[in-house]
Length: 178
Image (tube, rainbow, N blue to C red; front, side, top):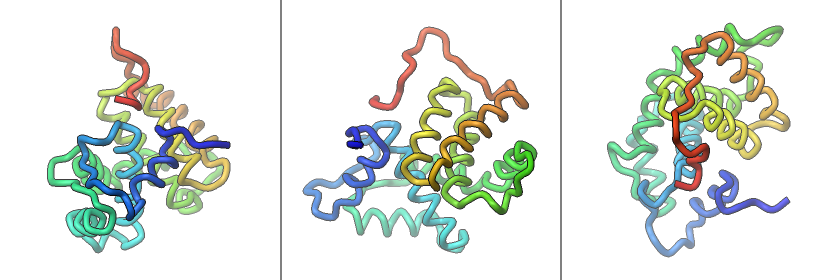
């Protein structure tokens, strides 16, 4: 199966190519690429058990991978908000788990769920886009078949809290290439 240029997996290959010739900034990235990069920052923060500051992680990524992510960029803003709200987001996930313990969810799946719930709470994108993007991130970064779990849990979240459902009137249904 080939990876399309907008797939989060294809982006991972592009962004972490230390041979790239030009520095990438947030303005060079589309929404899907921003989500993939946010995922990497969340993963790194979690791997360090949140003892490393996001600023330090960003500096390290910027240096190692020719990135120019700065304070206030969409990547930094989203990652910081999700890190700051991770306990609240986890508490929103726990009641949705039927016959499943929160500590049994893989780290990557947890991070994708946190990102998606955070995005749903923002109510700036159609909920179908948010769920689709979470599924795509799961296919790339999470455990095998985790995308099915993510899809089911996010559907349940929308049923439990209909305020998370958002469909902008008259907007395009796809933001991944913008």
